[in-house]
Length: 247
Length: 247
DNA sequence: TAGTGGTCTAGACCACGGG
DNA sequence: CCGTGGTCTAGACCACTAG
Image 1 (cartoon, protein in one colour):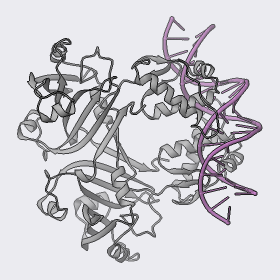
Image 2 (cartoon, chains in turn purple, orange, cyan, red; image 1 turned 120 degrees about the vertical axis):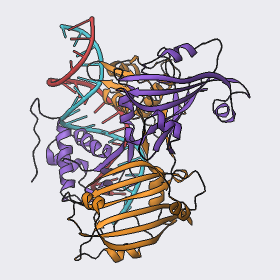
Image 3 (cartoon, helix red, strand yellow; image 1 turned 180 degrees about the horizontal axis):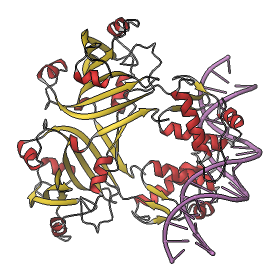
């Protein structure tokens, strides 16, 4: 064996080729889960490349979850396990950033007195005014998801109108003028859809949906946006592929 | 400003310090979302470090989702968006690898004729025999989740018994002797708990749960494990923090 | 064409793990 | 102690983007 790497211009980067070679060794079982792969210095000599290059190659495999580096001990082929998986919200991201196919219909908007839940999260005093907005997000002329949003009401900054009027926007929390947020927390929950919600979303499925809850903070660490999305799961498949695919 | 980095032994790595410095600039708004941060070569000169070191520092920020590199153009501070988030199954992983607190109670096991669903997924012929196992996974003496598993039945390899007897195991699909899998797909779904399930799990909540469906493939790309976990969402909080936390 | 990030080298020393 | 991965340097050239 001992395949060689090409260093021609136009070919894939060397580190990338090396990553594929090692990946192939894992896929075929030449390198089995749990065992230690050759050390970086050995691999560097073997393939006649620099150490940094081999490190970068192995870095690719680490990111893909195929191997695990252990300082002072070695690099090991990982066993595939259920728990070591991540799910990304790519589907949601694609929809929310697709300015062409996106429409927003405001279902409800008003200034209310903060209840216990939203008041607590937004760190408001009791009975403080909050803006409540409910919107239906439509993608390619089909209902996609529902949003409920709470914002502290600041009479000096009437963001209400821009919220109301927007029918297509890149950021679904505030208006486009906002700088953004410093940080936030997101929570994913299973949530049975209520009748009214299912109707709005024109859902006929099993009524199971995801609830994506968010709290966002401004640059002064003040919570300034709280709310959630209700998304039928068919609209946002959460799939993750692990191990070696299409070597 | 222009903080200096320490290169003493025992202090944090330089790249790590640099990452924190830049992160701080983002947190305070000195570097605002959307704008370009100074080029790598400029930063290298500014902080009197090597280019590779600055690259590593920025690499940290890229992994954390704070900045985005654009080849030939620059590195930009990212705006926080709902869609660009990932959720990890750390909670589940911790439980399933906690050999001390883990118990498994087999609820049902038998060899059956493959139905349409599992037969199709496992690529079996009609009416081919499959092993069906239902188990209750218990953690720290409390019911944690339910597993349903389908395996192709191979009379030459009687894995049934090892499956049956295991009361604590690192890999919840097969016995410990197995090498592992080459690849797999996982799907996360919202699923209302059925009455019987809620009872087994001693759940009194809203009855909303996650369903984690898996299909695993051996090194010959044959599907060899299909099944799912039913996990009450309180047992597996899916939370993600984005942006700059605890600078 | 100038400036950016992307790849790569051939060294060096440090920090950790296990025998 | 030795071998491992982790950090770091001071260069080099390539590939891409934008003015």
